[in-house]
Image (spheres, rainbow, N blue to C red):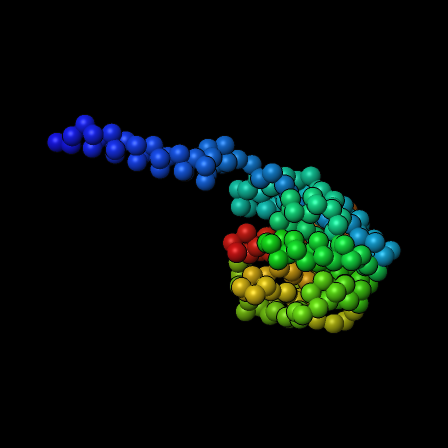
Amino acid sequence: MQSTSTQQISKSIIYLILLILCVICPLSAIDSPIKTGFARLQYDGGGDWYNDPEVLPNLAKFVNRHLSANIPIDQSVVKAADTRLFDFPFVYLTGHGNIRFSDTELNNLRTWMLRGGFLYADDDYGMDKSFRREIKRVFPEREMVELDATHPLFTSYFDFSTGLPKIHEHDEHPPQCFALFDDDGRMMMFYTYETNISDGWADPDTHNDPAELRETALRFGLNIIHYMMAK
């Protein structure tokens, strides 16, 4: 039988462990809803960063339904220089025209991405040249790596082992995707080109896409989110 002093020591150790656990993982954080949803990046330069505003809410609904998640469906808009950027783990960029970041925006984007932020960029036809130029200004020492269907993102949830789907025909070129990785191999940025995945997230009457094509686009979008969340 334990002595009274030994029992008191044991209780003290248990209380200390519980206190540490409460500090590390407070009860209010357990099963609490995600505080921030998906954000769209607003940029200067003349490109239409704002087009198809329903795409992120539609993607959030799709992800919530399939992953039993609780991502807010209201789209947030954030600028690269805004301190609010660090509230969002996933930020989306699209458009048809020119993109231009200030020095402050470049530095903030770089810091955010290195600290865990994930940027998904989807060329809506016309932003490729300026996007490549600006992302090179963000990370001049890194090169975008082209990915193929052997990358885990393609099978992170739905099976796209046959390759990147082409949602909208811009030119008669094959769809491509590229990524930037940090020193630990974590993907910081994913860029889709000649496919326009996010157009397939729009409402049915926006582009008059068949339901099958929209489902394909949403499924690949879920793969992007699922892969990001798992890393």
